[in-house]
Image 1 (cartoon, rainbow, N blue to C red):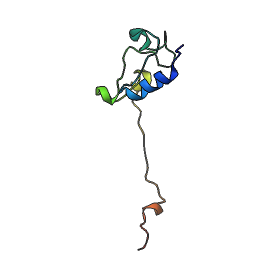
Image 2 (image 1 turned 180 degrees about the vertical axis):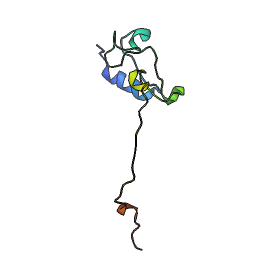
Image 3 (image 1 turned 60 degrees about the horizontal axis):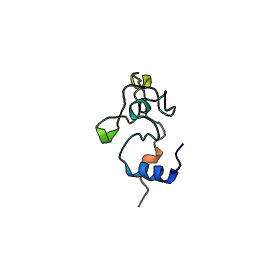
Image 4 (image 1 turned 30 degrees about the vertical axis):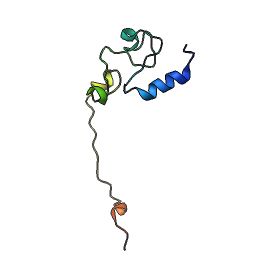
Length: 85
């Protein structure tokens, strides 16, 4: 689709942005699915820390689920010991 991949790569490295759309309409391409299958379909777009958001991808169902993690202390604490001087 694009005939200048080096230019696209350079632009991607230089821009502080969460998504770069190549040869696609910005309003439709940014929401994914219709014009861009690499982005999850969503009408809510995260813009990352550059825009003051906590995520830098399209907001989907996985972001709306509360997931609890229970962590237990590891019993093998040998790596906490300091070497003798």
